[in-house]
Length: 390
Image (tube, rainbow, N blue to C red; front, side, top):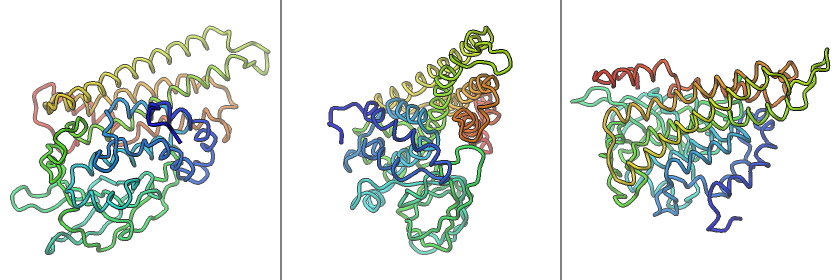
């Protein structure tokens, strides 16, 4: 479909009209339409963080996140779900070679969903664990062939250790629990596992994954992708979606307001001082948020290319910058939406969808600024990280 020399951002731009046309369908279905997944797979973006050994791109963080922000201007739900399906390859690349072969050996286009909160229950058995649990918020799970699921594993020396098990589609069911006000099209349903056996090579602890001491932590020493701890790339996806939603809100406000006439007076809204001031402030706010994120993403690229592991303060900034940017984007969207008129509240109005989706981007545990402010504040004060604020 695309020439190998076509930049990824241009490939994504080419499929935006079709993705935008499916935005209402995504909401109605409460999951990303298969057509959108196929369109984006056609660009190759799902291979962004996949190892080159499997035909992956090993893409730099800013290049990927700018693509996600662009997709979000067409459909926030599609951008959210697809970004996670693609990003999980970064984490999988840190697992054993055996695990990677199972996922990508026969089908390199395989994508994986997740539910990372440690809801799972495990029992140690020979060669692995027996695993059960209900795992909510698994975005894009209808399109994944595996799932990364969180649990606390008993360790004789360390006690409960936050860990992830990767489970094949045959070992879990999907329960449709996704009835929400925002990001309706992400299909973030609940995965149900009942007493499945998970072998040891499909399990890694979060501390090992974060410090590149996992089974696959040294598999790709020449790569400039995997030297950034995966969790910060994971967090970047949410802020990139929020950015795209806010940028589209600015475009929409201009489109609707330029020719909008007040019903009772006939006044031209686009020529009013308040309308221009609201537009100016939100535009500045979103531009500032974008610049802040781009600086953060470029910092990740720099560390990866130099193969320098970030220190604790740097990681605290990477973790929390995302949430602060989202806070800015939501404020910018609110400022424009509250002046968009009653017609923007109709179910088929794009503005109310952008408003709802913007607020949903701030509702994730990783974009909760109350949590992030504590994380960064403690780091700046030289205090030990609080594990309850992960």
